[in-house]
Amino acid sequence: MRLIGADGVQLGIKSLPDALELARQVDLDLVEVAPLANPPVCRIMDYGKFRYEESQKAKESRKKTSQVTIKEVKFRPKIGKGDFDTKVRHMHDFLEDGHKVKVTLQFRGREMAHPELGAKILDAVLEQLGEAVKVETQARLEGRNMTMVLAPEKKVVKKPEKNSTKPTAPGDETQIASESGESHAENEDK
Image (cartoon, rainbow, N blue to C red; front, side):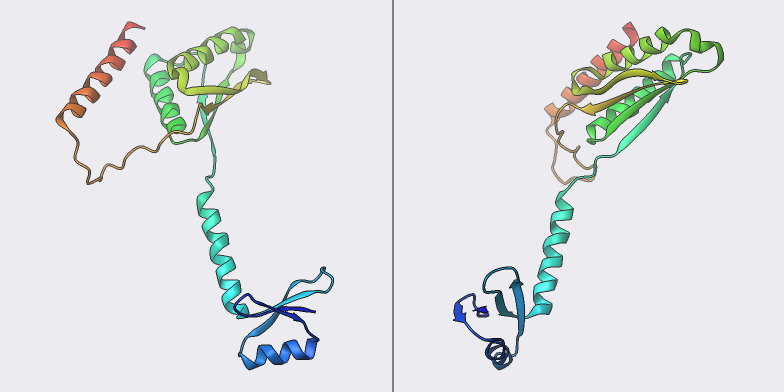
């Protein structure tokens, strides 16, 4: 078998008893790292430390992956303006956080005769969310429900924490106030 030392230097091709003897001399383990190679490759190392480092690497890679969850928001054809605005605001927050949103419109009874009312509501949702959203699954009628899946247009930067120590400039506050004033004016026109 081909033997690699604890410091990563190749020690050449050795027999199994010789390799075990060398590992015992430095008080480490003999680990087969490539059993399918010809000849098989073994390495002298601390196996417990090796397993610990591998688990740390795996844990670190899991931290870096982000879970995309699907949030569902349900509407009815006869939804009021206030409820509609609240649900769209929640959808906007979900999309900002990077989640996908499944919009479900539930029909009951004779509402099934007018699916165009549902399509009108879903179009209003898209209009209010604007350019920050892309339609992943177009609206379609499935039984008594009309569903549509929305995703954020691009990876959005997380909102700053409320407890941040970074001071804000006075100009920033007036800009935020004017932006929110514009959005209220837009809602009142509709």
